[in-house]
Image 1 (cartoon, rainbow, N blue to C red):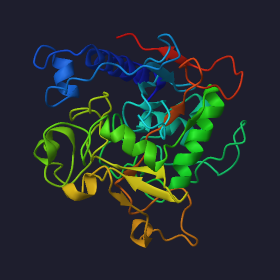
Image 2: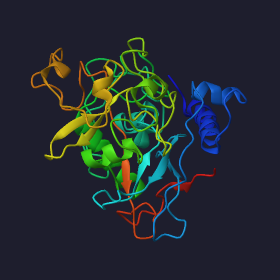
Image 3: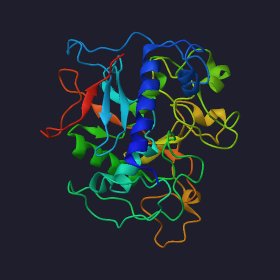
Length: 324
């Protein structure tokens, strides 16, 4: 069992690494940074800004309730034609450290994380009327790894309900991205299929996929980011989005896919094989027994001042400025 004290130590280490990455540490000069990014990071473009906001549109940390963990949100400009509005986006895919708090009600218990617990909790409503998952049929991380790894094996409903819980807990407008938003964030101002210079030849530096992943997902932020500092938009795990037809779809491809499925315009929709071995009837609404390649990241809407948009007056909305 992992205690909150252990999680706090892990959090401080992760925060130090993230701060180093944000500051642009040179590869090879910092051992911790070398562990975070296998190759030197791509130089990010000038930080995006809003016409309005006077400097408020900037990175921040989002604390997870009742846990010594937080994740980094980055500002992203809107599209030139105005079809995609400015928004904040998770620097990485949502990891187990954040997901566990919601899935296993650690914000209510304040005790151990469920990395090895596997006892599950009954489905029901939280104090904020957000439902929680039922007990998973198999260990959700499938033994690939937990701390620092992107969430996998989850349904669209799980991803949506996590966003509702995070919005209710923080008071900020968290949600899943739309397909158009996701493609805009992936491309980071580039044209074509990839959100980086150099074309598909540079893909191994930016993504975990069939050619280099060794048949498994990897910890987040261990390939190069795109020009806006966003990691793993190509590869590692597929990401749930709201499709153009309003239905769930996934984008980005995963550790098991060839390059074509990692292109910004590619999409994969759930089929029966993603949950074929689930013995329950009906199949779980929360977990994908055979979907160990499906995760998600969150976005947050922007208000008129360039700040994360609030959805309530909750006083403890823990959005803290990120110090470069």
